[in-house]
Image 1: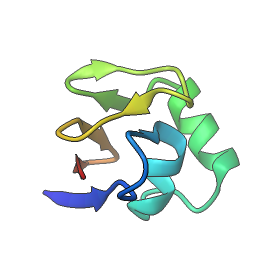
Image 2: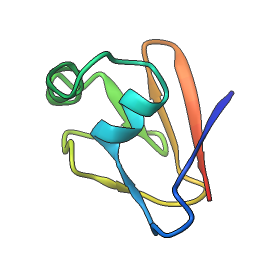
Image 3: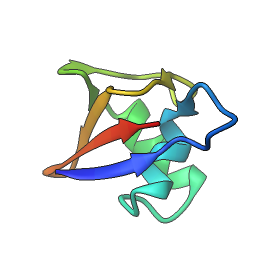
Image 4: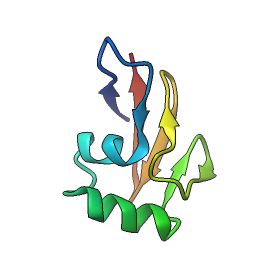
Length: 71
């Protein structure tokens, strides 16, 4: 399982940004498309909001990759 870090001064990272940071998508437009198509899950639930706030410990999955958000 991959991990991505939230910046120390931030409480969360948005789902679209997290997908890019984990190198699962190449752009914000691509992130928007895969999220709206229902291809991304957050903590086991399909997520349709690109702006969904992910906090420390949240886990998201896309295209066979699973990523944990850490502070």
